[in-house]
Length: 574
Image (cartoon, rainbow, N blue to C red):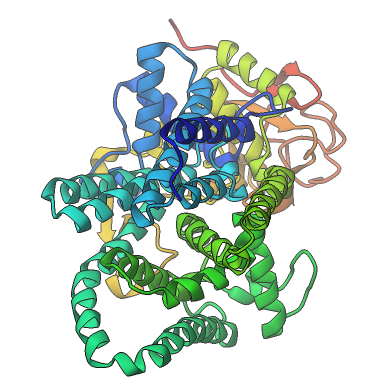
């Protein structure tokens, strides 16, 4: 169905409005997520130093080299900050909104190229922009996964345009977008699988066109066979992963043994939990995706674009159980299938046009309501996705204006937040994430990039969980040093490490004290007295060890969130 041009523009404007509203941070005062604060520290480093200290090799830009991370987002955030003067926290908010708007418009154009139907295109754009996990990762968040998903429809547009026009410029642009996606997040490298599907699509189209006419009497059985093959392939791969947990790099039993409704380690429970998890991430109407897949396979005639998209689906279908990245990456494909499934159901009511319109509108409204109700669920579900609390932000502002050197924090999540806003180095590195060997070691001068030794990993060991192909040699694990400082048994060693990392301030998160916690583990801290008394007082937790903080240390700042101790030394000479 085609709509008048003005109606199309009005609907697109409404979609843009919905995109902004769903991502407007209601009840949120600051940026969200440990990944955001980590990227924020990288953007701070570029803005302060004028270059990225972790870029030691061309593959560093894609996070594939030792002590590196995909760098497009930090470069964009720091560049906009330097040009406009807008604080990086504000740039994160604006960047997410702009990319989300680009994503919804690209999704509309992509769907329009696939099927010249305005209702179909608008429905795809709506469901795409409302996918709960996609909303989460583009709402005041610098997690680059959301940015990859936002640009993925544009990548499909370029490949489809090249397929239809044979204009080499579209292919060149698609390669450029591939590099951008890969530099945004390692998840962007999955685009290689889409390229493989694209390369196979044209010869497959020619072969199937010939077979269709020569084996026309077997056409129906072939349709059934393709649908059954797709389902069997997915279930078989998942069953193998169930029988041999971790065989593909992800332990599906560990991931899905506990769900919203069911708990257990049997195959049926894991499959149901995975399905419920998908619905929470992609949207309520995901249940229509299998119907859409069947309808898409059944559709005749098929153009080369249809076969390209089916190949993409069949390549990713067996991979869905591997990890969240796969699910998020294929959100544009899921939304296409969902809308195909929904429109297929409305065909049952094709003789009652008004009823079919109401039915489709009801599905879209139900999906929008579900997305609104669940868009903040993941922020509440994962403590690492929560926004920076106001009291922590206040502490960071104090450290920004009054602090120097490095701070050591007893809570990794809080430390990452403080580092992002204050601009000071922090231990532990990476906040709540597992950046044990982090680009922050290069950024903050704890490792000399000029003398860094690396080795190439064994190519046979590369899997979906592999983060880098070059690993550092003889580089200390900064997490272990942080643990030695807080959970010390040797005061001399602890103080030596504090000197090595230039730790001048110790920040105690009041909600964690007397423990130190990061990377998912809580341990008792030996750094401060567990009774909250000043340094030098009897330590009830570590009675046999001296406090690392000397008697000369004193509190310089405190509020409801944290207590800041000046551990040693005065401010640097100016």
